[in-house]
Length: 194
Image (tube, rainbow, N blue to C red; front, side, top):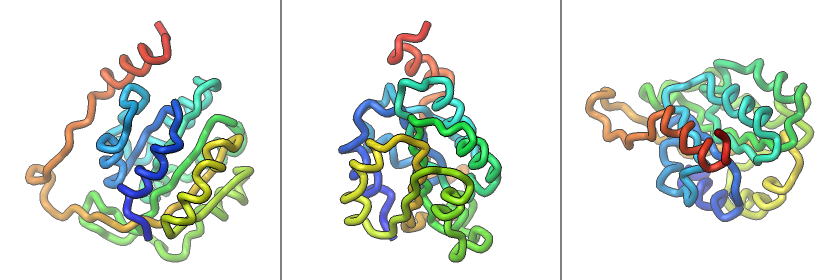
């Protein structure tokens, strides 16, 4: 398993000008790594909907590379979106799945069938033309440049170390995310969309 911080560090070196959105507990670490926050789209508290939102960005902005760092718990809430993505084949979409096998936000309950689901094979069989699975950092680092230069949709499943939050929500150290309206406004300005 890989630490999410290391995934983001390896990815950032090959990000280019990609628009990035994240989900899950691991996704909260992305703002500390990102070197281009104007191209980061905050989807905080959108569990189960982040995949659809990123897919919509890919369709609406076909000339921009769109990268999603999804979580398996959220993806399982809206698994049908994989068929929609595969059906539309957005060439600008890279879909990373950070699989920690638990619902880390709510105390670490195991995701159903967590050790048996092969998300990369699932994405391949549903129609993603290119899929990968990584459980060690060296393999990810060796392949990340290829992944980022492929036509999408590309699906990349990564086993990560769970970072479970057990404290009540009011007692957690939360890193404030940019509010969604601010995120949208700044992205529009970055892209020159009036």
